[in-house]
Amino acid sequence: MKRAFSTVLSVLIAAGVVGASKAVYATPTEADGLNERCDFLPYGEEAPTVSMACSFIEDEVGVSILWADGIYSEFEAFHQTHGNASEGLYLDERGGLVRQQTGFGSTVRQFQMEQGTVVVYL
Image (cartoon, rainbow, N blue to C red; front, top):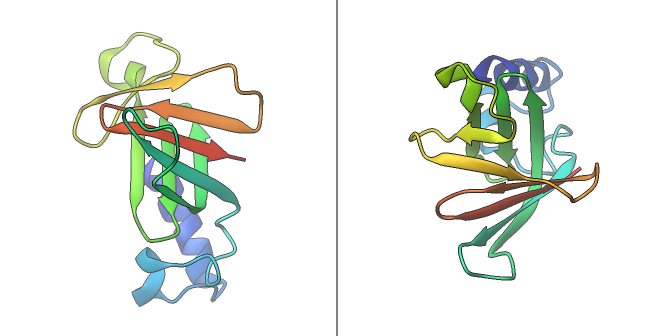
């Protein structure tokens, strides 16, 4: 997963969209790659406390989210580390379980974590 993010970041730097020293802190006006919107809803809340542009990558290894404020979230597919095909289950950076919730159509991805929910609008 970090490879996919590094590739996106390398392309942005090479294209001059973001400078190498500012790459981790790219804002929506500095980076064309932030084409989605992400919300974070803390556990038990109905409204997001964070809503901003983001970049979302999903592949067989897991999910990567680069938030406009420079925060990078990575969810590794559970089967990558445990050898079974547990569709929709991931592990976050600290080993916590992340469950992808379904039923939101093809333009929304929702990830339930211990602390709250990340919603990605594609």
